[in-house]
Structure formats: C-alpha cells, structure tokens
Image (tube, rainbow, N blue to C red; front, side):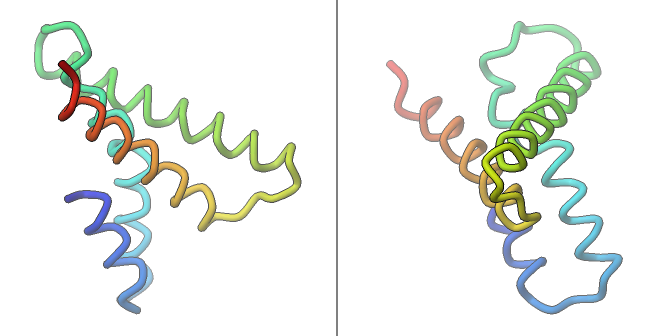
Length: 96
C-alpha cells in the first residue's frame, strides 16, 4: 500500500512539499518495512531503527549501482526501491 501511495502522490501533481515527504518516506522506510517479519522479534523501536537502516542502505547501494552503470535517475531509484519492497512482500506472502 505504501509503495502505491507514494507512486500515486508523486504522479498526481501535488505540491512540492507533499511529494518530497512521500519520497522521503519511500526512501527511508518502505524497503526495510517489507523485511520486518524476517527480523528478530525484539522491541518495536529496535525493529523500526533496523528497518530504516536497511532502507537507507538499500537506497545507497541501488543509487551507486545505477551511477556506476551510467543510468542514474531519481525515478529509477524510486522504481527500484518499490520493486525491492514489493518483492520482499511477495516472497514473505508465498513463503512456506
């Protein structure tokens, strides 16, 4: 839901601050949130901090990969992060 909401907000032509906050939420939390069920069961604060760290790490890795390939674009990073988040959710849903 979060991935679809960010895509809808960024493409809807809303004000710049709303789009910036949506993109920041996408970069900072969504990829790691898809991995939360696989993280150790600990306190909520610890899980959120780990999810944010994973998300920012994945963003940096994806950005670096696109830059090295000579194909860096902000839209490409957002689409890549959305794909990572959706893949994690689908793998979790259909895992035995």
